[in-house]
Length: 183
Image (cartoon, rainbow, N blue to C red; front, side, top):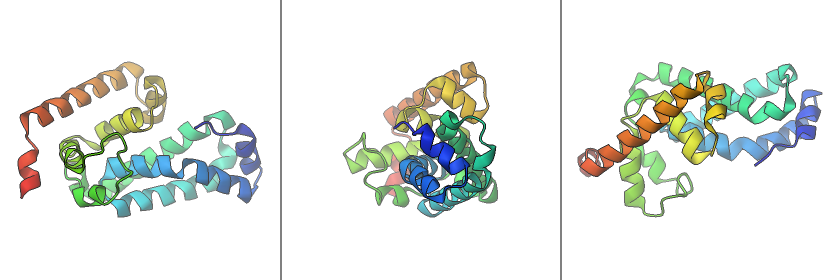
């Protein structure tokens, strides 16, 4: 979804109704990304709330209104990293029950068993790796956009994305995470 630059400009000038419209336009994308990265509904909700609070306070400093979506995803990325630093356990272990309760989180897989296998495999990725995969696969961002959000060179993002997808594919094919789901 493209953000209307006029609404961003109105929000920058202090129009709270315009900011509310921006909130409504990007909330779902931010929440899905945060949930994908953090693996916890509560942490995802908190990260998104903190992101919007920071965005509301800082929107006047946004230099280019057309870059609003990338700008707010940068804020979200920083908030997710901060949350993970506060809760080290989330770095390598995702709360699969939270995902299982959210049917619309991963719309590209209809079978809940497939979702659990995929989400379990995602637990083997780092926060940055999950963020790159989420921005690419779920949000549809291009490599250069992800590079801007993550503050990484495009080549690094491209190679990390490729390695992550290969890592996921191999771990799912080998069934590495299936046993952890049976416990």
